[in-house]
Amino acid sequence: MKIAFINGPNLNMLGTREQGFYGVKTLKQINEELETRAKKHQVELLFFQSNFEGKLVEFIHSLNSLAALKGIIINAAAFTHSSIAIRDALLSIAAPFIEVHISNVYSREAFRKNSYFSDKAIGSIVGLGDYGYHAALEYFIRLETLPA
Ligand code: DQA
Image (tube, rainbow, N blue to C red; front, side):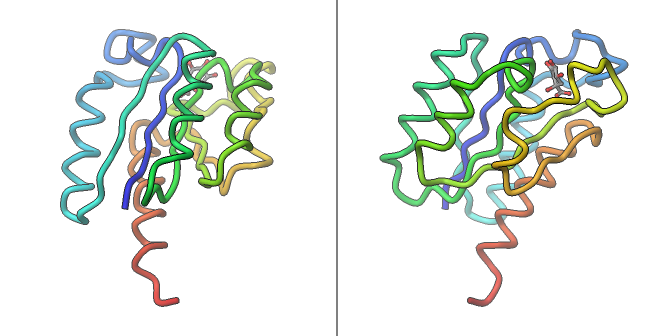
């Protein structure tokens, strides 16, 4: 099975960006750790990060033709709170998605409490740091291995 990891704007700055909220790991380190976990379960990961809304939309569209795609794990970062275009892109394809936020968006500014995705996500994971990505991956792995 394949899982797509999508990260939105400014997440390429993880490691140095607001460490109190986002920790000290770079996105590269986080992705490598996810890769290690995925390999143990013969899961193929596709990683995509962009600071541009249209590029995120186009990447999501490109996933529609991908055989064996089990799901999407998305941290749309600031676009979570603003992007109807990314919401519509996620709804335009068949794969289900889980929403992840590294920080606890509910304990921060009021504008971060609104998500354009959470009502359509399988679930949302917030505030668990980079472990949130692992928890989402575990969910899809578990789903795959459950008896029908
Ligand atoms: C974030 C939370 C967003 O509000 C913020 O704009 C981000 C990162 C998180 O992972 O906690 O860039 O999605």
